[in-house]
Image (cartoon, rainbow, N blue to C red; front, side, top):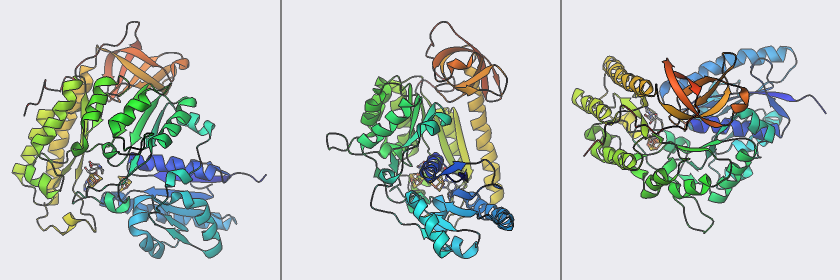
Length: 466
Ligand code: SAH
Ligand code: SF4
Ligand code: F3S
């Protein structure tokens, strides 16, 4: 057999892209490719791109500039290096990439990457290949399964895509255009994937989707199942210690999801629930289809069944027309909710989205200033949240050896990294840890002899009231 060919893949953007990158690696493993950490000795380089903000998109072209040098160098040594642009920029700007960047051999969209082997063959034959179709057939059904060794190498926590695409059309967002319309995978397929993972040592599954709680895949009874029902079903699979899901939309929080949080100890009490803004005027202009008060009520429904639940969120500052008063409403909402953490972004106009045509642009300096104020508030909440864990005993799922010799690192229910001195056979186990100190974002502690106690997060007010 010939020597394995080497594949280097670089992923930008969301968890969906991280998952897709793994599936591309799995697909190409069946073609004899092994992963390499270095671009220079790669026979195939894949950029799995993100289109969400201008900065993310721009990275592609600067990266392609660097790849041109690497490819020329390979050619000097009579070695072929294929360059693939995959992901959401590929979907949005496929033809332009082919035109602007001769270094690129294959452009493949997020719904077509199961065709990679054929596309690489076509590029070799014809020079270039482009596939940005939204195929009717189930991409996942066409993808080869990961090898057991690959699953084990990826560790105890894994993503499983259950839903893809988005029909919400928030006015600032490219996702409905790059990922296409909303599709849910059937329950049976998801169960197969989860069992394959748990059979190979995975203990924590994060169900992912652009709008994961809009999930409505076909159940074994032929009926559409909501996410809560799927979670109940998955929690019964032997080996599952923890379940999570991301990203959820406030409008799609139904009673089955709330009940799942009430009934399933495996479902972690930590929910990413983006709100974007606290101003009803801006929420309407964003087409989020809910008000700030409705969002607070959703939070209250979760807190009523899981007092220890914590939230993270996404915010956009400087959406067209955002006044100081609108921004103040965002700060007020953050203060009311009390987050364990959040991501905040400056608005970035994306070609083809309705908001890109809105006239009242907020000045960059104003955006910078608002971003700094919002981040300061979020940072202080995050710090208080982490600080409140000190002195408590909590369950930690141990993931891997830490950089410090003898230390093992895992995560709490709230995804906080927690370090203990322990033998490495605790990797893969959930064990109680008494937390003693906080260093930046990492908690330090010792293995406890008594079980974890549930504690309500410090920054969460009893109920936000509405
Ligand atoms: N489906 C998720 C979000 C996916 S995009 C949801 O509905 O909330 C991830 C985050 O990127 C968004 O929550 C938003 O905060 C940010 N984002 C999306 N488009 C953006 C844009 N044009 N400018 C700035 N931030 C943006
Ligand atoms: Fe984008 Fe809105 Fe869909 Fe989220 S819900 S992916 S922000 S359009
Ligand atoms: Fe980016 Fe596409 Fe995800 S635009 S955020 S990689 S869905």
